[in-house]
Length: 393
Ligand code: TMP
Image 1 (cartoon, rainbow, N blue to C red):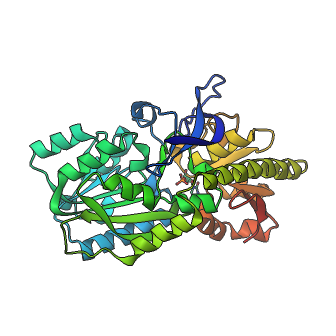
Image 2: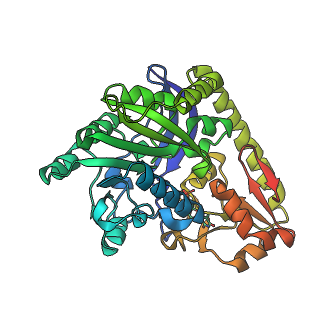
Image 3: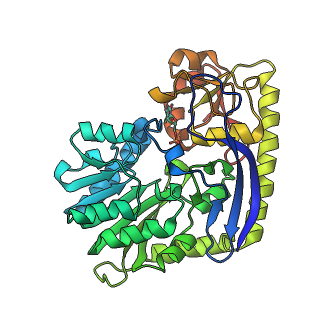
């Protein structure tokens, strides 16, 4: 049974950056639900994939050194431990992972044509389709069973999880391995990062929920790694139940136990998260209003998460002067749902600001390292994670 626990208000499409301010931009209710049976946490309103993931999708995986390093590291591990003859990546984006492999050994599946074209140009086989049973039938016609499927920050964007895992089950060889990486619900709740939710993030997974989904298929988790990326993610290593080559490690029980003891099986935990989120909203608004009276505030990183924050907390152009971002496709556009302009990142803009609101708080370490001069000159960052405050290091 799906039980409601948090209303994040009316939200625009989080990656719909437009070059003019669109007054009547479509907005959708963003309400969060907990399924008491499957333990899956999801948003209720499902926007068709074609509206969100098309040939104008602006998000680029390679935009941070943190992500580039993470993909490099996992590719070394994959090659060493699993030695796949053929790896398929679901949601290959701009090739941040694929680039670490030999072109003959990998296939990317990427529905956004603008992104698929980037990897195609680099010579990587990329199929510009959504991940579903139709795409798998197409691959099977070409006799392409796969011995390693990898997917990072993609499966939680697809509404029909049954079809997602059925398609994986169909395509994976007998001894095949599935590796998925997604934000961790436990970390999201611990950090009160309600902004992990936006229309693209239909689900935020816990190990408890993933284990339940896999029960329907010939698949099981055999290892879990906690990652710092994206504000705390889990990397799940999944195999066929009959595959005895890999033993189920105690990292799996450890994660499940941590989730249960935090209360991820209980509805009351989500209600508590809801109360904490609305306090975070009030406190952030109060802090920014106080600082704005005689300061210049710039948003750092025009993230989809920041879109949730701005629209939930009702932070507008009177409170944040502009955002900066290194992504070309976001520059000179507006933060969805607001009149706040996104400017091309430059040291000059940063140094003129008194405060920088950390839109990309998940890259805090990388950003603070990069902006040492700003801090030395008396500047400071504002963050809402884990609770609204000013930070200098
Ligand atoms: P994400 O949190 O959804 O991965 O988005 C990160 C955004 O922040 C992306 O648009 C790139 C941007 N960004 C910068 O502009 N400068 C930086 O130094 C970093 C790390 C990210």
